[in-house]
Length: 606
Image (tube, rainbow, N blue to C red; front, side, top):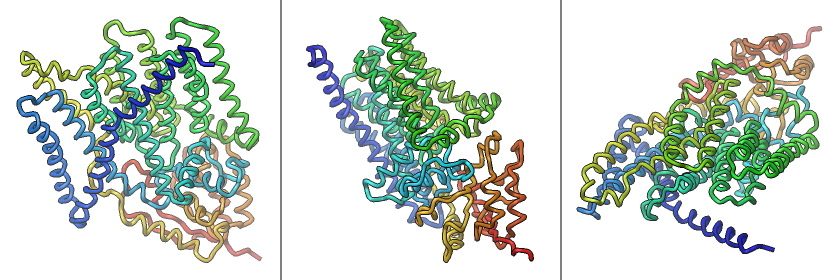
């Protein structure tokens, strides 16, 4: 039975949720406007298909016109009552909307590409969905070389969502779903800004506060898709859903701090397990939550900390146990051993920290602004949770070569920065005071210029032009033609599962699963060697056969896999597929658009 206090808490939460939904409408309107403008940009390019530079100039004029239209409309409507603080917010909102529209146009060519070869993870991501569809085990014996080193929640959830809208085999739809995860993460991060400002004992008038949602949501969506630490959220990778899980985890922490509602601890206890199902590193939230409860919650309750710790560890253990029951030792191998024994480079970690410095800077600047004065200890704890998170992300990013591991920490850094920006922004009431009018105009102008320049430094800027070469379509058509008239199970393609998806074939001996296992020495490649000796494949399509980046046997590996030697002993080159003529773009590995060697079995010697 609910007590009077419980009823009050429920009523408060319901009222808070309703309020959050309504005030976020300006942000949602801003995102919808960006989508419409992206269509306009696309139309402008159709008018000058042979002269993209001219089209970009017209897009630039469109952007200047939109800035002039929104700011001019406000000035005309208010005239002498024109408020520089409000005008500055309108300019920032317009700028962020325009940047989102350019991003949506720019990314559309990659999202709509029908083959899963934009990133190393896409082939295995699609393969996991295919396995789920046909009832094949997600994790099988490592000798099959057909499993993914990430946990399967992102793949399965993506498929379920696509199935519910009738797009069970559409790779572009699956990529759109990844962008929707990023948008949901930005929406949650936007509400985190509201919670942070309230915890910092700072309030705006309701009308002025709603204007900030028009800045926060598109800006945080740009953070969630930035080119420095979140460059791959549109691809088929676990990053986008991991971003959503982390945004939700931080929102729960802030909500718990601001309301003291202990029922939220039950949700917080299962978040790390949910994160583990998406990406192994997200189990870190268990340590972050426990550390916060131990060092920053007051009054301290060791019993509560102990119960929470046991609960979250039990959830993580239960998740691992379910995986073991479903897939046995194969689950443990692929999820924890195959990737868990990679060598960490401290030099590379430091390099990644330097490359992602803008997000460390804005998170620290936001903390400096919001934590000034006598702020609650709990708010300091929330900031330190972010700082520990992004430092751990930078440290563990030394396992690989890309910065996408720092994505969640970067989004939360954006939460602190944009909350702090609202804190130091000139108040509309103050700006209306005659004595401060000229100073507020100057302050607002300088702030808008600084933030506008900072947007590009944070990786928001893209040129509104198609970078995706048309030759990529010729490339995948030639690959598909090699499968015509043959069973897909008898044709091995090293990377890319879209063809097998169409035919419902789960293929062994894919090139991507060799990477981590060859690098850290945990792989057993005897299964493929045996299949090559038996000439199981009627045709093999393989990239970079004579290159140091050959997927099955890379030059830096401490020990040869033996695949190349066995392959050349039993197969011979019978043709080539020429590489894509132009660079796809800097953040897309060109490896998957390189020349393909077509190999067929050598004739048996008598």
